[in-house]
Image (cartoon, rainbow, N blue to C red; front, side, top):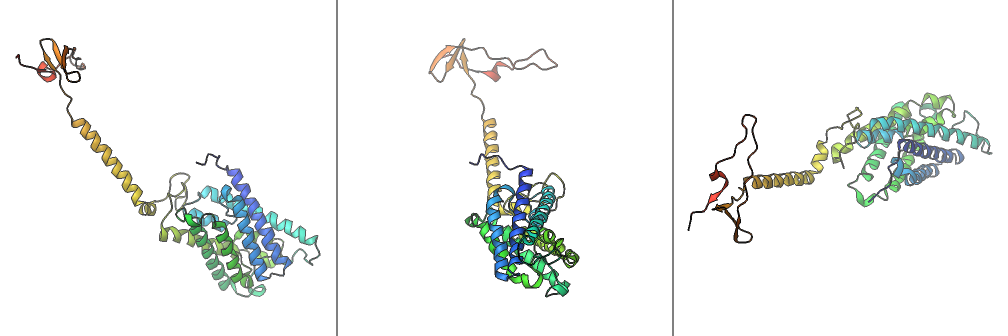
Length: 334
């Protein structure tokens, strides 16, 4: 049994900040130093998410991405309050990662200057696709990424629980292989924000798309997964379509996937009720009294009769006792 103290909210936020910082620094750093080599950059992002998920997943869940937090909230796994806090921590971590990366490459002989692309995302003149294609690519890639995350972290999928970070990292690498030459692959608003303000005006102008599209893709996945496969447990209070601080969204799908548990609970309640009715329906044995003596069934002999307790008094009477015929069975003389 795990007796450790659950992580506090500040610890969760610090874990998200550090994880996003490493993701941006390593992934975008590989893009800068390798000239956006597809394999090297994709693997850098994938490996970064694996090592950070294994490091901090037990603390915060290892999101490192506002889109992941949004999908988790819609799927009922994270409250909306924590979703906003996670997104803020992730964005701060990404900005710190972008700043540290910019200072690092400035101090290195890689020929980068402020205003040059720093692993930033883009479309149109600076990319290979126009706005419509970029939107579709980012939405679809984020949707795939979130489906993988929700599936491998499902508590019913215990067979791959220990390998979940590895599966997530491989998924992130694979979608980078698809999207790097088209948009630079975002699927993470914090990652795009973290380097856009060090990459010049084009990256800032295109930034809206790499915030909107990943959130849309994540929202679709967060709604589709529980609708299709049900929930592994009751929604976290204040998650799903319930935006309040307390309560949870409709657990209909959870009930569907837990019919056996609910059936066992109902059966137990029925058995308990039957036992109570049986106990109430069995009349108490009345003592047998004759000439001041009472028959004791346990010792199989006559003993001095015990005085019967009087019935409780009522407000309207000074007290009453039922007739002797209601209390005793008088044995006829032999």
